[in-house]
Image (cartoon, rainbow, N blue to C red; front, side, top):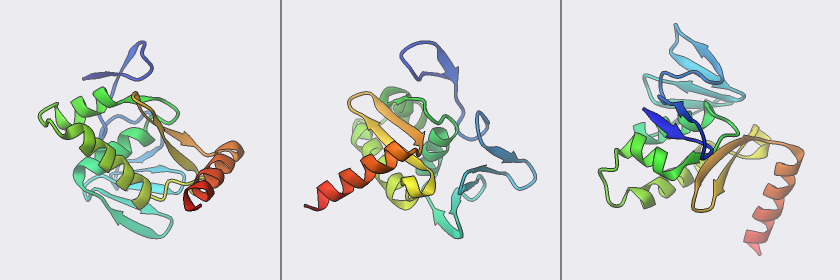
Length: 145
């Protein structure tokens, strides 16, 4: 199956078996991305020393994002891959899944990754930089006021 990640050429994506990034450990069936270790069989993610249990769909979406850092995953592509466009409410469900992934995996500059929403287009997981940390601090401070 193919998705359009930049509005240009398509790339093959299988959220569980493709290894575009990260360290794959075949014997343990896991991949590591910075402080995040994805355990495939259990659909769990280890963040530092904490284990986070995600739903299968959340796990697949998170893994899809981590395997393509810096690349835009369009809403349409994610909906097609994870929901097979079988649910009329899937679009809002996608937003909810992204929000839960952000919260449960603590996707903050302090942990090395930031999940960015590209309005009306999709989502992009970026490795944290000094600039993203400043933007994150500004946005969270602004929301509290």
